[in-house]
Image (tube, rainbow, N blue to C red; front, side, top):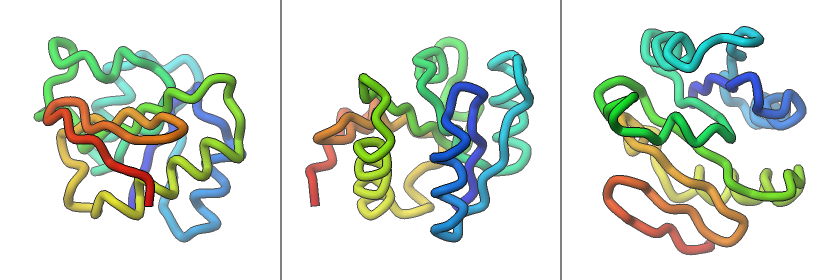
Length: 121
């Protein structure tokens, strides 16, 4: 899968995704959110972020992006985040991301617009 890591997304987690064979680009430091969304859409990349602004349908309608993975695990614990991301990627095919926002929690993932809950594997 193709991802774009927002500036607030851990470089170590991006590297981990690369080690799994994913294509992970990185947004420029201090890039404004609209620029991140535009780059991700232009390159057909799913945005990796902790920034809730990307879930705002008024700012970024589903047609504006190729998908968003919004990680909401606090405190930011790498092992828990890796596990939650792996769980979500095993349940959502690449074709299931376009224009959708998935909130990633420690124990479940939720597709925002449809209200679809993804249960643990």
